[in-house]
Image (cartoon, rainbow, N blue to C red; front, side, top):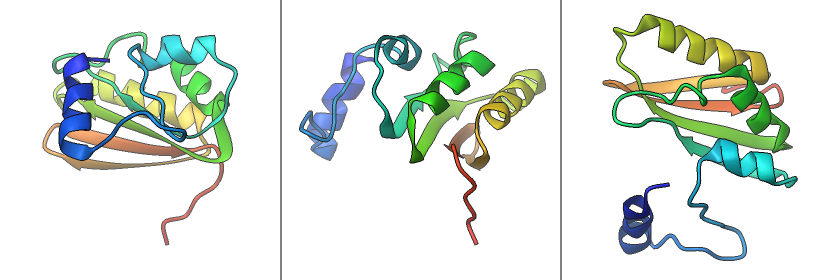
Length: 124
């Protein structure tokens, strides 16, 4: 994780480590490989520049995230994907769908946030 992002979170959003929040300065994939804990929420910021790293856009990565969520948890992925790269977008959606029972997304310009759940969830 970029230390500058952590500084912004602390300064402007009053986000800091406490009993309910642990900020990790490593990639989510590497971190989840090292721990055996389960989480209510896993948030991944999945882009470097305007590209999703290849090791994140894999079935293995999304299965790893799903395996570390509690049954009532949620996985949130922030991505910036150029819609011109249709294969990357298609792979991302397929990999999320493979790992999670329910998934939704919300987009604005090139930014898409995915919400995925290890259980059936209905918005209605």
